[in-house]
Image (cartoon, rainbow, N blue to C red; front, side):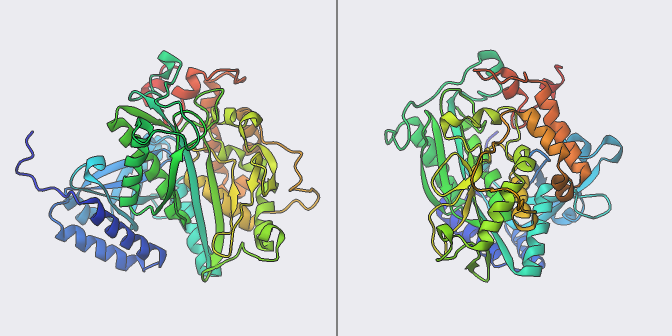
Length: 476
């Protein structure tokens, strides 16, 4: 169909960056929600070139869902956006299926038309139960509620930045075809920092970085990673909910760009045996009135007592959280000590095999790095688990937590057992969500051999929660 007479919004990248950075500044400064809402509604009303608003939300496993609403409809119905929750894995049962989407107007993005389509803007939503309360299975809403509560009661701002690794493989939909081919094909055989300026991996990274920059990510650095065809595109710190949103956008935009180029961006933790897997190293800190509470110039490794207590609580609850951080069958291939695997339940300033690392920092950048998080983890659940545990969890005073000697499970079955039995998980998620999440993970585990073996099985890819489609599950 000809687009000659259409006039849909398609802004230059420089203008997109300006708009998104201005919106990000409003979010950081916590401009009241009603002011942001009225500003966005006025913009949508006045900007005639917008045809649709894409509302994003995530299910219990962290799978991103996108709903396109006609702009005119949304302007009149944004307070009553209903959807069938029973069609979302891990959400409501069929007999209690009605859920609503509440718009988080502060999480509003202008997007490049060549990646997301002309005439569209994005906004994140929170899921609301039929009684009007936040839905317990929507971890974005849980994380936002916790973050807002700490800011209101203690003045704390929760900060996070994620280093998300992935692979770029030949062909579109390489994951969905894996059960037929039983292999992934690299598009590049270089390594860490080693790639020709215009080779396919570099072109993909450059394009993705441009899109991130336009969307206000505030990029820091990007490069090929250690394994062939592996990439990492880093960006700056954000308040925790914005940071989790950016993880979802990062994976969405890299997948779309790879698809446009005829490739597949893959976030399986260990898609190829024999080379390094992919992690999502999660850097976290807590600030109050612009003071980094993790910094102490005279502290051990210059980490404050507050920071060490935060870290010790993570180590205390490491087994409780393992399934949160490593949520798939494939993730346990990554916890292999031969490839810098962070499987040791201990802290270190230097050893990258430690679950938690204390990087070199200063009064602005001091942080802890939770290295045991895989790139397919639900970002809202994993960040909630880290901050809720680090601030409110208990500390095992009987153990030398930082010395080591304990290890994370090497298979998902053991991680599921620990998760189900955890009183801490029941406390922070509620027994209902704890049980539903465990059941989802058990269903995937049951479709794969208990022993991982020496090569990646088709089932651990096909029934992975980021590849999932209903017809495949129905083959069993």
